[in-house]
Amino acid sequence: MKNFRFWQWINDGYVKLTIKPGQTLRWQNWFRTEEGWGSHSLEFELSGDGAELSLVEIHAGSDCDGRHSETWEMLFDTVGGTWRTATALDYPDYPELQDPDVRMPMMVEKRKYQRDERAEAMGY
Image (tube, rainbow, N blue to C red):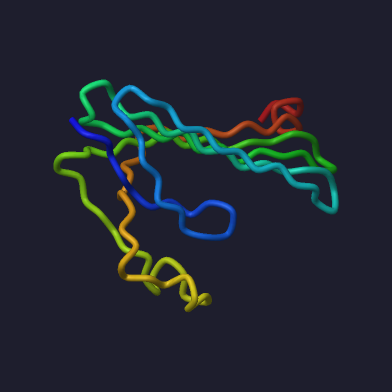
């Protein structure tokens, strides 16, 4: 399998990424909020045979109620997977983000979980 190319929304714009079989690409953004901090991270990994692209996406932060995070584990079949474009359905309020030439893999969610330290401390 050759390199795999796809578009991803990163740093307020579309970026075309190229990943080699067996390679991992990581991106993270950290920011302050009114009540603490937040972060967003992406980790893409292309299988050694290039047949499957995996993504782990994490949104985390801390506010007046403590730390919390949401994690998604997703997969894309690079051979037969479905592609999507950046259309009005994705960004109805932002016409400048609608670009039918930008093709992104339609990732299939395999697992989603969240942590909320305050809820855990209260026994939820």
